[in-house]
Image (cartoon, rainbow, N blue to C red; front, side):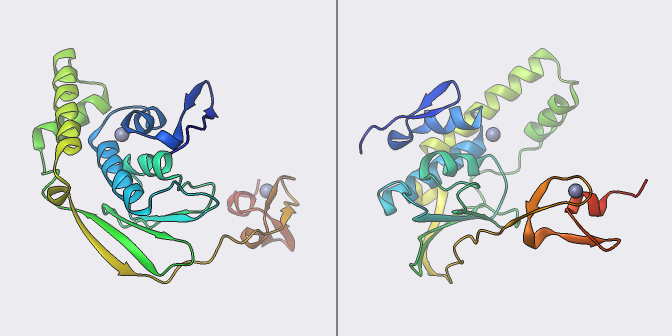
Length: 211
Ligand SMILES: [Zn+2]
Ligand SMILES: [Zn+2]
């Protein structure tokens, strides 16, 4: 692969030679989620070879978790480009296909990869609440890192169930005209407009309580 550098903020992330480090930099931390996403992304990248050029590779992800960031960083399937489709199913299922092709690769995380760990969950809750002691914080960090490492090292067949499926490819993103809200004066996408007191308004103004 060629080494074109894309400048992102202050850091140069080389997406064409994306590796675990790229995903971690993009995501902000190492965690089991980004590790799962990395393994999914690398598997898809290997099957589909090149990084998505011009909306070619599309990913359907069935959760909104850390893992999705690896798919954005490594496969180039992003929210903004419209080649990352979210389904809020709360499942670690990732389906990749080339636009215009019905054949898709479905990657499903095996349920026993991240078994329920009550101690870890309790520590996480304490950390979030800001009540963890420094020792507990360190204990969480170590266990979190160990889980991530385990995911990175697991053989593919222990991690995923991989299958080829046929899908009905979604339409290419349609570009809509911008309308100006008669209340706040901000622009919004035409199909998301509402009518309030006979005037065309944006959703935020429609939902806002009248003063
Ligand atoms: Zn994370
Ligand atoms: Zn408005």
